[in-house]
Length: 203
Image 1 (cartoon, rainbow, N blue to C red):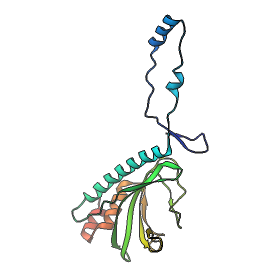
Image 2 (image 1 turned 60 degrees about the vertical axis):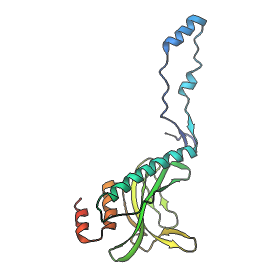
Image 3 (image 1 turned 180 degrees about the vertical axis):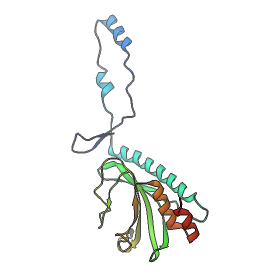
Image 4 (image 1 turned 135 degrees about the horizontal axis):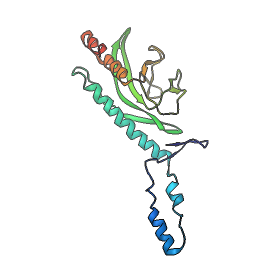
């Protein structure tokens, strides 16, 4: 859970519930000592705060579990559609409860493009895809969901993959909050013939 009363985000573990107060124990102590000891009150109500690293690790496990489930659903649709399993995650700087998971990547021929290299991601937040080197814009801090695919290209100077802004709307192939729509879009990218595409459209 979040504690946003401070300038920087702090996280506490809300999975730990305090044990029910033993009223009988309090009164037994009173009969024995003549005093009611309420020294455990603070311990019962204190929040156990988590480090950003701890939160990021939890977030990563959940993202990769969700990414693996999505990958299995995609690859289980039809024997002729197979994608490589490329699961890895990243969390957002300063907001480790938010992150995204890379699920798979491939090359496809579609529309007016002979061959496009692309990657499919899922995230536990919603935002705009940046139009420049900034990947995410206007990130909503609350939990949400987003599935998206972007065209990619190899930047030989940097030695890494970057968004290919020459494809479609600044490199964005699709973005949705609906998992079924995301599944259909990824399958369409992997479909090799019109008959299979017709089946996918009917889903």
